Amino acid sequence: MHLVWFSRLMVLISLLVVTIFGDLTSVAACPDLPSFIEKSSCETIPAENSYLYLNYRLAFAKKGDKVVFCPFNVIKNRRDPPIIIKNDIEVACAERDSCVVSGPGTHMVVKTKQAKLFVQGFRFTGATKSSIFVHKSSSVNEHTICQSTFEGNESKKGA
Image (cartoon, rainbow, N blue to C red):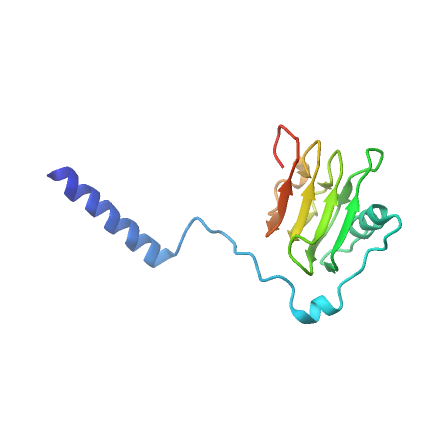
């Protein structure tokens, strides 16, 4: 009898906490995908040397850059280095799951103390190591991966 009342009391307390403070499990919500205006001005990745272009574009992005890519499909070869993220940047795809990075190894490395990465709408496939690796020097920052998909990655240490 006391157990029934205790469990009802716990449910009531839980409901009050959620009502007063909100859902404490969701720290940040993903924003909507880029608006129509941003889609109309999305960056196109050239078909030739597409992975190298993507690598260069993101590795040399300036702090605070917000880059919206038009849909693409780039293939990283074994010899290609991962994309090194050195600054605070936001990267989004104009259409969800239509910016595809595929290939072996690691696709992106968040490397410096200044780096803070926001990725939205990408699909990462075929990584043989972690698709996105956060180096310990930048693990103090908050990184966000929204509405992105990881497929067929073989790493034993995570996506």
